[in-house]
Length: 277
Image 1: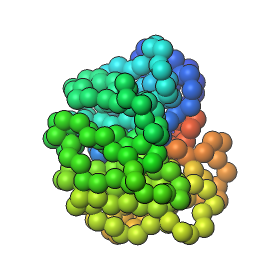
Image 2: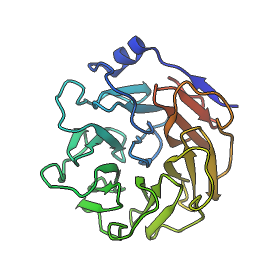
Image 3: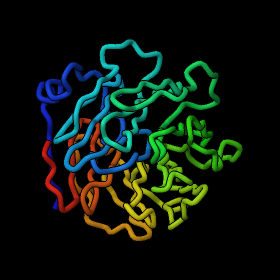
Image 4: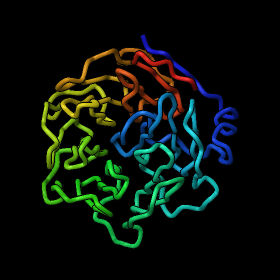
């Protein structure tokens, strides 16, 4: 059974420290013991907490996740579409749809596409395990690598059935997966393909891909909370068939399972670890 947690508008703003909530939550939180989640969203690192990021870059820290800064008070050229935590969990990057990068805590700035004319908007990012770089992915699957992030391939020259909604790096940092809104999976480097929902009927579009700790499996989550498990990823439950106030926009690995986040900041925990919101 999921543990559903709702956060009031005022409580969320106070917990974020200095930001007001203006705009919807964009994609998954980052759990404090996880690596970057996919789907144009985010993740974090430590034992029992998460960050939520809003489209204006407002940050909401829950559990033991700490607030390191935000863009909530800054006038952005384009909305925030993704987030990645540093391996230490002591910082994070935010990325906007134009590829602008905002670094907080121990997150180092390695470059951005903010001044480049993009063919398609940036929908997600992932950090390398060394904390020495990151990748940005656009909705056409184009990849932009910075720091020690190596280029392993892209779908930039491929005609896609549906747009790429995010990416996730492998535990080694020597590969990555893309996920499209139809559940199609694209694997590069040492990222293995374990299955996908591409070509299969979905009730709602896929929002995110989350790998297991081993990197030998992954979960996909759809906007209705439906879960699709592949490889060594166990199915521990879903929100499919349950009424949601707002759609699911992302998911992170948490404990022995996963935790979903809705666009209103609602959290749905399917794991052996209590979430301290």
